[in-house]
Image (cartoon, rainbow, N blue to C red; front, side, top):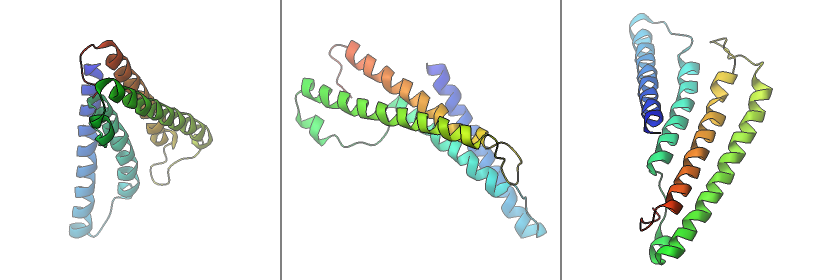
Length: 155
């Protein structure tokens, strides 16, 4: 599992570097040569979707998303664990809905191409079901680990 997460982290770094270089090149070309790369806006926008979704996947693995813990912190450990289970179940329902709806969207968009790149929109919309499915699996893994570990705090 750690190898997959490390690969995702490296992919995020590479994609962020690519977007950074693309935008720097665009600014330099506009300022120095009074010309422009036609693909910069579209490509950087679509890559940012992948970056955000992949980074969110890493945060799910690291349990790094922001949350309010006033209620679970005030409860005994067993009750706090129950609250976290409910939260995880709601998260699983949400991620399942995102994955399902985005697969339906991909089916509709697979014939549509991007304007400047000429690439199928499928490649960019694929970030949603791929990453939602990864987050679903990681959330499920967290739930299983929480139930199988004895004496470990719920979060």
